[in-house]
Image 1 (cartoon, rainbow, N blue to C red):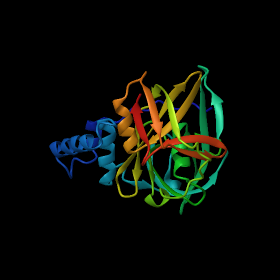
Image 2 (tube, rainbow, N blue to C red):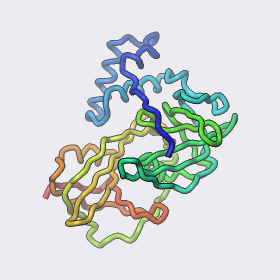
Image 3 (cartoon, rainbow, N blue to C red):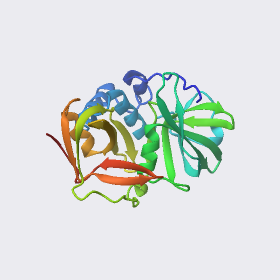
Length: 264
C-alpha cells in the first residue's frame, strides 16, 4: 500500500482568502452558520467553508485539466471514468484491513489514475458508477505513482456525483419476509458529505450492530444519517424496511427512504 501523505485541513481563515474580494467576512461566516444549521451539524464548519468556496468557483481556480496536473498539489478535476480495476484489500501495520480501488479518469486533455480508499469505494458502488460515468473530484491530491500522476480522494476531498447517476436501478437480493434487524449499536462512523449536481449535499455514514456473536455493517443515507445521531453507542436498535443490495457478490444493507430506526 502506498504511503498517504499527511494533509492538513484548510481553516476557515485560509479558505476565506480565496473569496474575500467578492464577499465580506461576516457574510461568509453567516453563510457557514446557515448551512451548519440546515445540515444539523453533521459536518464541520471548515468543510462547509470549502463547499462555499467551490460554489463560487474559487476552489483552486475551479476546474483543472488532467494534462496540467502536477504531483503534490490539490485540484478540482472533472472527467469520465474510462476503466475500473478490481477492488483490493490490504493489511496495515497495526493489523487492520483496508480497501483500495483504482480507476482511470479521462477528460479531453488526457487520462490519470484515480485512487479510492475504503468508504469512498462504497459511495462509488451505491451510485452505480461505471465506465463512461461522469464524476468530479473536489480537492483531490496528486502524487506520482508507478504509471504517472495519481489523483487521490483524501480526508478533505469530496466526490461530486452528477444527479443523473443517482436514480439508476440497483440489484436487490431476496429479502426476508419481515425485513427486520435488531442489535446493539457498537460503532457509528463520522458523517460524510457528497455533492449532488444541483449543488446540494447528500450524506452517508456507516454503523455496526452486534447480534449475539455476529456483526452487521449498515450504510445510511441522507435523512437516516440525521436520525442515527440521536442514538448512543450501546443502545439496542431495531431497524425495519432496510434494502439489501448485491455489489459484486457482497451483501450490503442500506437505510434510505421508508426505512425506520428505533430504540428497543
